[in-house]
Image 1 (tube, rainbow, N blue to C red):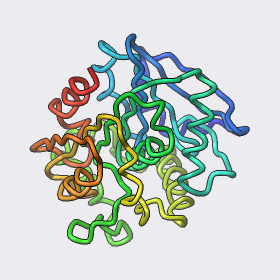
Image 2: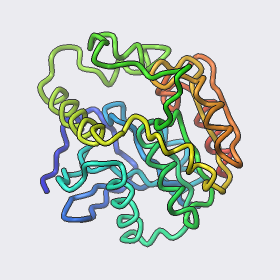
Image 3: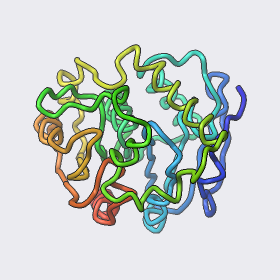
Length: 267
């Protein structure tokens, strides 16, 4: 499949090695840097805000950053139309990379991927970190309906301090950026038809996540409210929780406390 790297001009991959794999006919791009125990990071529903948060981890871990099919530099795979297809994709990618044991960190959409991967492949994962994960339907702390949010207000939903994301947003209409967001939004919409935001059966499965687990949340998260954290913690057998003040949904971008909590837990 074609390489769709819309918006890549704003993402700095310097210091990371670029690797290319073909999984189910789909070009899959993985960036790798650092030495030590493997740390696989599964990104959220948008790649436009870059990977700066992960650079500090390369001093202690071999950081592995794949782009999901339909996102970033990876190609499109028309065979993927539900979350389980992504789980299968990563099973095959990790086999191709000969990754037998690793730490797994997932954020938002990638947090749900990581949780469901851990349920099915717990033998591979040494420790698990879920950063503001999606997947649970919590009536008291619902996720917002993006159809009712004006586009110009969405950045304020993502961060506590807009200065965090301004460098990654176009100052004027940008066709390349628009195409990237349209493509990634389309990838989310495709699997949303089969329950991306919430998995009604997830509460029945999370007891199978038996490895040490850390939940990380921004206290001011307006996308997946931090009130959901305690529901996840009750369902996971061995889960700690770090809630970071003065941070929103992009907590790894905004909070050094969040980044350090991940590193200390995995170390």
